[in-house]
Image 1 (cartoon, rainbow, N blue to C red):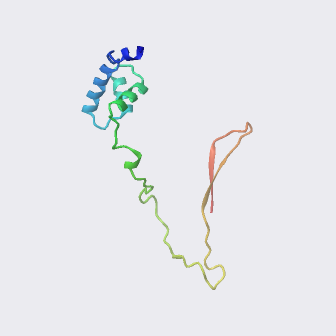
Image 2: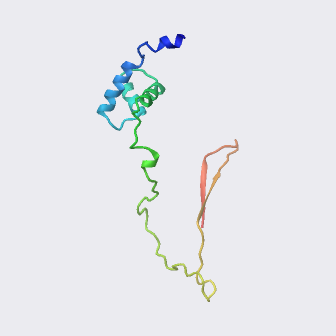
Image 3: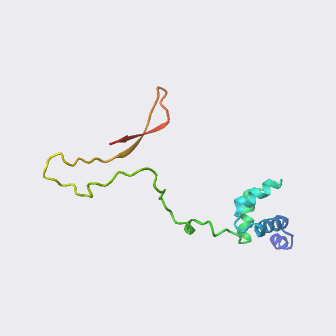
Length: 126
């Protein structure tokens, strides 16, 4: 029955909840990481797990930066000049060695020194 008496206690996080609500009112797109950073720059030491728990309790999760809200795009624009496509997928010919094609593939490997470790390098073959 001791836990029933605990319901009457004031919350230890009530002051922090007010500060988090004030930060969130000023910055609508702040999640728990940015709120934690803001509290840290204000000079208040608080655990980020505690901030995350309070944000979840107050239902203040940011939905504008979720993974589903952004669509992946690998398009980087025109990086370099692209060679003209002269074959247009017409690979067959009656003359030998008229059309010679190759595939450029990148292989990743490790260069090992005499100690057995080293940085990763890549090798392109064409």
